[in-house]
Length: 293
Image (cartoon, rainbow, N blue to C red; front, side, top):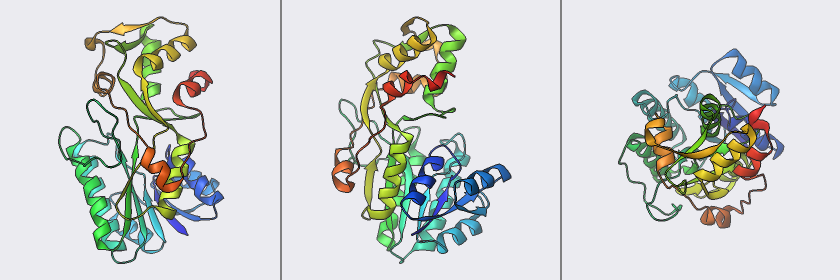
């Protein structure tokens, strides 16, 4: 297959593109800069220049390929500009692929289900601060009614691995370095789901190859890691104390992330596609030390 990949030079794209090529697929990567174009070329993929606002480019990429994996997003991903841009991109892909039976793989995030792990069968309800993003996910799934093999790959809070520089673990490490304390909220029992970036890449490949229309997939290897365990791993490597800190010590996205229990299961995904994560879990990955060099 020839796969059009947005965000091909990004964190997950840089793992997904080689995964696709190794499996015998051709890749057309969207690049908005010379640096991105070079990175995509170096991975062995073809390049189409443009960004998510270039709807004619998105249309051309979709029409000239056998499927689409949509990884790109505007930062911050929950801003009105970002969600509007994403909605336009999904609508463009849907219109371009309608009636073709081609795969359209859209990225989302695992949901929060109080008192239990989120599953692939949970209803997507567009409420709360990420309501607009959930609406976009709903639109992607609805594309399956238009003759498109559309599906969602729901990513956990941490997509980790060597080279990660902008995710939540690097943010926690930077904060710990700045304050001299590796902290967590409350008793630290709130849990994060996680996946190694290489395992996430393999799920994207399986999704574009085999996922049925309307499927919701969870790219989750670690169902739920207590935030205290994450803080302790960071503290060990920085040789600083680990302790509970008050909520006033945190700001931005880290506060709700640390204060919410958000485990997620991938049992259905593993059975459906035979996906089996093989790379280190989050704590083992932190303990390898590459986050601290």
